Length: 288
Image 1 (cartoon, rainbow, N blue to C red):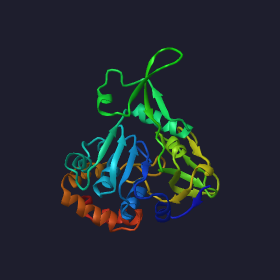
Image 2: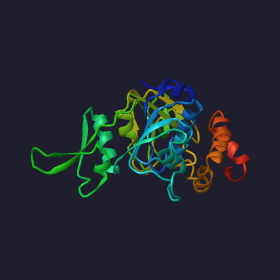
Image 3: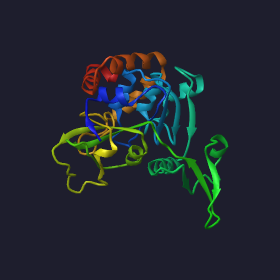
Image 4: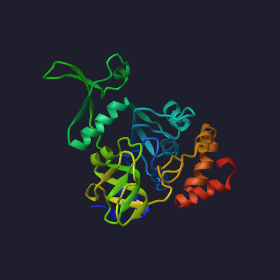
C-alpha cells in the first residue's frame, strides 16, 4: 500500500545496489528528479531498463551508477547521440556497460509479460532483422494453433520501477494522462514501485478531455512523492512544457568527460532536490 514520503526516503528504501531499475516515461513525464536522487545516493551496479533511454539515463550512466542497459532506442531526442552512454559502451568510462537491445514492441511485450506473471512475451517481429544475431534473449517459437513463427523475449520484472505522474490523492492512488508509454506495465511488473507526482490532491479527477487517463491504485505502489517539476526538463502535460534548449545544450555538456563531471557535480550532486537543481541551472549561463 502506498505511503506518501519524501523522494529521498523513497529512493533510499526502494533502490539498492545491483537492482534492476526501470525509470519509465515516454516523451513526457520522464522521472528526472528520481534519477537525480539515485545519482546523489551513489547507487552502483544497476541494470537500467527503459523503452527509450534519453538524457536522464545518459546522466545516470555517466555518474557511474549502471552496469547494464536493457533498451529499445537510445538518444538525445531531436538532437543526436547520448555521449555518456556511448563512452561507457565504447571505452568503459566511467565503468563498462553491457547492453541488451530490443525493439519497442518487444520491450512492451516483455513488460506486459512481467505484469502478467508470465515468463516471456510474444510478438510478431524481428523477421528479417539482424538484431537476434546480437541479442541471445530474442528467440523464435511456433504458435501451437496456427504454426506461425513468432518472436519471444524474457519478461521484464524490475526490482523497482519509478515513474512520474500528474496527480495522486492522499491515499496514494495515482492519475496520469497524455502520451503514455509503458508506465502502467512497468509499475505492475515491479517488485517495488515509486511514483513522483506534480501534486497531491484530495480527489482524483482528470481535466476535461484529458487524453489517455490512467489510474494506478495505491495497492500496486510502495511510495508516492510530491515533486513539483519532477519531470523537468521533459514536460508534464497540463503543468509545464518541454525545455528544448536544455536538450540542445546537453549535447555540448555531455561530449567531454570533464565538462560532464563538473556539470553533474554542480547541478545534481551539489543540490538537494529538484527545486535547488532548477535554481542552479537558472544561475548558470546556458545551463553550464
